[in-house]
Length: 381
View 1 (cartoon, rainbow, N blue to C red):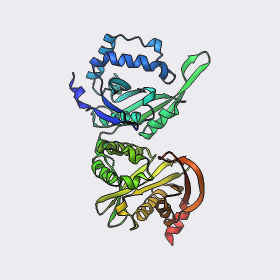
View 2 (tube, rainbow, N blue to C red):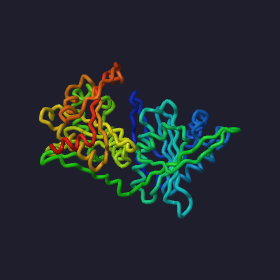
View 3 (spheres, one colour):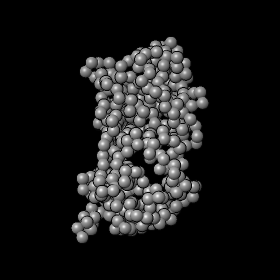
View 4 (spheres, rainbow, N blue to C red):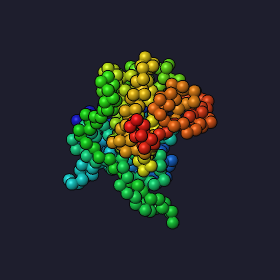
């Protein structure tokens, strides 16, 4: 086994229904299992990749040789996901074998159908990006996805990939049957492994901070201590069962911050975390975003969240350049609604049973919003 094999430490992911998945580097001894995985999944994923089942005719020895080359190559990582003794996912990062392109890695990922939509793709891609940020060679990640594979595109955009362009009729499936391809890329900066730093000062006692992976212990402790309090309204609380879960979220939040799709900021009062406030579903073309927030039970009743949210709205309409910010509050959550009202947001209406809550029922939502000129006028008073 090469020295490269030791630089990707195995990671564990637990799906919402409790299945444990281990992510690790593939090695030559995995050749037979990788072949079995490919033969199982190719018929189902062939609408989304260029290889057909008939074209995949590797022998075990050929696959072993391929894995050995990948294992030894500088800047290469073939990651597999295993659950209950079988491979359930594969992510391959292959550097281009030309001196002037050696800083570019081409990506390809597949998952078994029953392991889609459970956070595994995000976990694998986040782990790969982190590994590349620590790696001295890779500077650019590049991939190609069919234009009709919107689910994959959403995942890649969430993790900081941007569209470089489209190639019409890139793949031909038969006479007159074509698919366009979307080319996407993500720059990798070695210094990003230290974390993107961002803070907003509210006042002498309160700061809003973009969390880093090293903050996971502190944030998880707050969530765990307030599990019953937060669990009434927040579906993600049930899924947050360890510091590793929180660390993974912090990594994803950093990518979303860089991609301008979401801003998640810890509310830090007197040096201690007491909650979170953020802008979600940022829609740059239309200049809108959703304001979200939560606060630990012990921090309520002192105006902490109102002050934090007011500072974030100043940033949203100022440096961030948004036109409209809205809140969708559960109609039963009086504290959440009162924050929006204290901020001077306009009540625009109520949605009846517009979404399922995480207890299996339906919830009503109250919509509040404020426009930039309204916010600026209020701030001048």
